[in-house]
Image 1: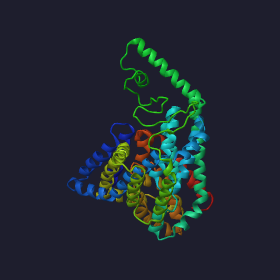
Image 2: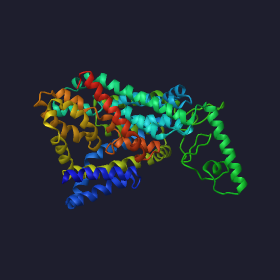
Image 3: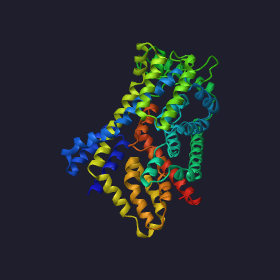
Image 4: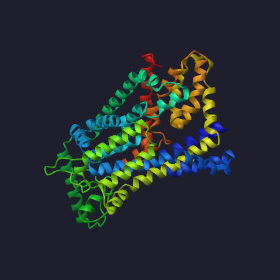
Length: 485
C-alpha cells in the first residue's frame, strides 16, 4: 500500500506542476501533507517536516549565501571577461548560443557545485536569449544536462556517495567511467547543436545590430499605434517609451533594462551587444584580482573540504560585501538586489523538505525501493549492472542522492554480488542517471536555474526529461560497449 501511495504522490505532484495547476512550492507542501493523512500518519506530519527541514537546512543556508556571494561577484564584474568571450563566440547565431550554453555550463561545473554553475551560466547567457527572443527552456535544459554529466566528478557528490556506500575508492569508480561520460558530454553538445539549429530555423540568423534595429522599429510602431488609438496602457515597450510603467514579460529596451528592472544587456556606441552593462555603478575594476583570488580560494577550500560549504559561503559573502561595498547602505542595496532569488530558492528548498520528510518518514521511499528491487527477474542477476544503470534514471529522479546511494545501491550491489557482478561495476552503473537527476524536483539547485532564468518549473520539466533520459541511456550504452559496466 505504501508503495502505491508513494508512486501516486510523486505522480500527482509532477502532473499538477507540469499542467500548472499548482505552484511548485504549494505542491511540495500540500500534496505530501495530504498523502501523509491518507497513510494514516497525519499526527506525525510535524515530526516528518521538522526532520526534513533539519536535513536540508544546511543546503538552504549554502544556497542563500552562495546566491549572495556570486551575485556580488557578478555585480562587481568578476565574470565579465567570461561573458564577453562567450558572446564573441556566439555572436547572434542561435546555434552558437545554445552550444555556448552547454560548453559554459560544463566548464563552470568543474567546481562541483550545481548552484554555482547555474548562477554563472544564466547570468552570462540570459541577456542573449532575451535579446534574440530565444527559448529560455532550451537554455535551462541544456545547462542542466551538461551539469548533470559533470556532476559525476569525484567531488561532485554522487561518486563519493557510491564509494562510501560500497566501501570503494572514488577514483577506481570514476576514472574508468571517463570515456562513457565523455560520450555523454559530447551527446549533450550534439543535442545543443541540434536544438540550436532548430532555434536558428525558427528565428533566422540576424546580426545583433539587425536584432536591435528590428526591436527599435517594433517599439516605434507600437508607440505610434498606441498614440493614435489613445490607448493608455499598450504594451510594455510602448508604455515605457511613452513614460509609462506597464510591461510584458519579454519586453526589453535598448538600454538593456528588462521590465523587472534587471540588466538584460546593453549596446555600445556602435550598437554592438555587450551582454552585461559595462558601465554599471557596482563594478569594482580595482578589486578584480582580489575578487578572483577570493573566489579561487573559496572553491579550493570547498573542494578540499576545509570547512562545511555553508560556512565557507557565509564567510565568503560577508568578506565580499565588506571589501567591495564598505558602506553599509551599499551593502544593504546589494543584499536587497538579490533578495528575490534568495527567497525563491530557500523557500523552495524548505518546501521540498516537506516532500522528502514525508517520503522518508512514512516509509514510502523504502517500500518503493524494495518493490523495484523485488520485481527484477531472477534471470537478470548476471546483468545487475545494466539493471542498476536503468533503475538509476527513475530512482535518482524520484529520490535524493542520499536515499538512492545509501538506501538502494547497497541492496542492488548485494544482489549483483550473488551473481558475480563486482561492486565497482555496480557503482559505475549507479552514476548513469545523474543528467536526469539534476532536473529532479528534489534537487535544490534546479530552482536556482529556473528562478534566475524566469522559467516555470513545469515547462522546464516537460522539455528536459526526454532529452536528459536519452543522455543517460547514451552514457549507459557507451559504458556497456566499452566494457566499463
